[in-house]
Image 1 (cartoon, rainbow, N blue to C red):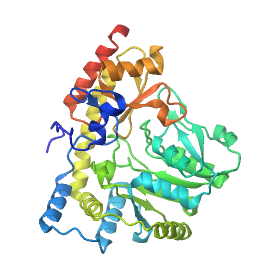
Image 2: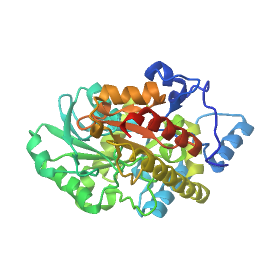
Image 3: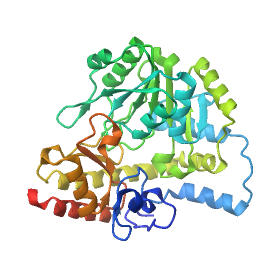
Image 4: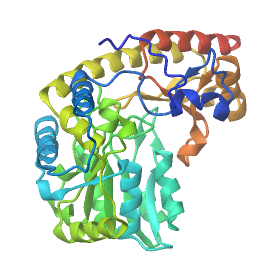
Amino acid sequence: MSFDDIIDRTGTHSMKWDMMEPIYGVPADDGISMWVADMDFRAPDCIQNEIARMHEHGIYGYFGDDSAYKQAIIWWMQNRHGWQVQPEWIFTTHGLVNGTAMCVDTFTDPGDGVVLFTPVYHAFAKVIKANGRRVVECPLTNNAGRYEMDFDAYDARLDGSERMVVLCSPHNPGGRVWTQEELQGVADFAKRHDLIIVSDEIHHDLVMPGQAHIPMANVDDSITDRLIMMTATTKTFNIAGSHTGNVIIPDPELRTRFGARMAGLGLSPNSFGLHMATAAYSPEGAAWVDDLTHYLDANRRLFDDAVNAIPGVASMPLQSTYLAWVDFSGTGMSPREFTDRVEKTARIAINHGPTFGLGGDDFLRFNLATPRALVEQAIERLQSAFSDLQ
């Protein structure tokens, strides 16, 4: 398998490609889809072979004995992240948006505030509001194209009604890999305000060469009684359609509360997701991820060099994820104007910055997890769409 293979995803019920024209008006016949955060690459052979084995067996009954699945998670977290997980800590949810919603539902009450460091993944605010809680936005500081946290400012924004903080680590859409010092700042902030920490680390495997992700669980032992970790194979291995994520809770009291809510809602995982995740968290899966991150890094460098050459446009340096966060404020254009140029002139579907919360107005998010030929084509279209600036 080659990451350069161009696979036609149209007509396959792909949100990313089949909904590009209805949602963004980007024509299906020659548009380039760079919005939804899934990849245009086939999953690794270890997952494909596991699905083939299930097909050959031909019976798709209830899943029993998840010990191999949990051991695969434990092996992966220890070997890839230096994080020791116990099997009884692991809950499986219907993906991590569901996991976030479950945490909000379990550990907060209607009307409570939930803190987000914005701009950040838009689904967080969506599920917080849908659960009748308040989104408390603590804007990140854009320091010369690098997002940083200002905890003094955040302390002043809180009024005591907040019960939870959701951290995106690594950060989506800014691509930051948070440092030990920054993560310790989050831990101290949570302790000062008595907040549950939900650390969504779904992008933790997708770090650029030379970067190192630190699991929040490894930062400060004193926050164990308020920490909930969320991880998944879905983003790493491009199997988001399996809707399988893990909420990992070291603290027994928090586990009891979460387990009771899971039982009360009758939630249980699907067998396909468990089989795929078990196959993915393996030495073969690890080798595939290593190849993937080098390919993504090359796409990143190609895209950034070209986009940053357009006057007034700046792509935030990407330390993790495959999502370029591009600032158009230097063009002097309104968000509507630069967005129209990308969608209508360049015919590229992208995520709009304002959906990510405070600080996102001048940005667009581009998904670079696609064959290099499509990245090159997107670059040419962007340069043409903004040629009057050059």
